[in-house]
Length: 121
Image 1 (cartoon, rainbow, N blue to C red):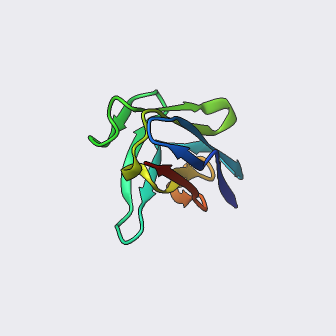
Image 2 (cartoon, rainbow, N blue to C red; image 1 turned 120 degrees about the horizontal axis):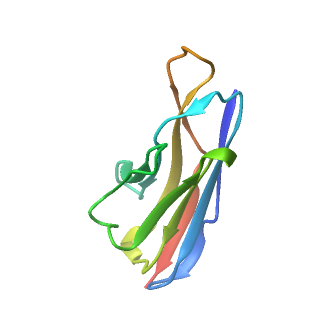
């Protein structure tokens, strides 16, 4: 099986920074586009940022210019550098990765357990 484990969440004041990390482990043949999503209380899960295997990135408008997504393909890791944090960034952040378990296999979607980010005003 495949596991995704996030780390790096916490409590920070508005204007501060946090760096989230996510590592994928297990039976992994390849990983396609990886992403970060978040879910605030009472709201639906939303896309924060994605990054392709080749490093092409995509960001939600609400985080453009403040967040930076990156990945290390050799380590099966994805990162999210969050700068100039705002109270509205408060949410549980989830890592997502479509993983192929073998050659010719279709990718299966995996999610981490989530890490809490709280931004105080």
